[in-house]
Length: 183
Image (cartoon, rainbow, N blue to C red; front, side):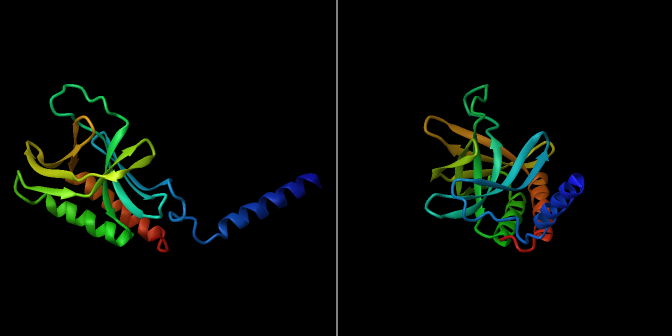
């Protein structure tokens, strides 16, 4: 009898969990980084996440991961900080900006463009917004973008390939189909 009661209680608890409609809520949690999509590409990890500041400012960001290079040095010692590109306030806007980023790869080598960006430290974002300057570079195996961002004492460079952006975009489209009510 005791086992039957425990099984019934577990079944009721499980049923109420599945009855909830919107488990994907990224608003209303200031200072918390909500991961939407993660993509591994060429031994690098790229994340699309939402973040709300303490003042209520909300946005989606694309994390390019830690710096790939620090010009003038042979070692990269800044593994904590990451460049996070601002992608918009809605998922549709994020999708458009990712497609625009993919189109930027078609420009000639040496073309530059500024992107609004913030520096990510651990699981939060610094309040100050600093532009990340992207330059199209032609390499042996295709083009890549090099994002340069100025820090307090030095500047960092982070590399991005077209395939990584396409992978993030594909995963975002899957996420949007699985969660049609997510904003």
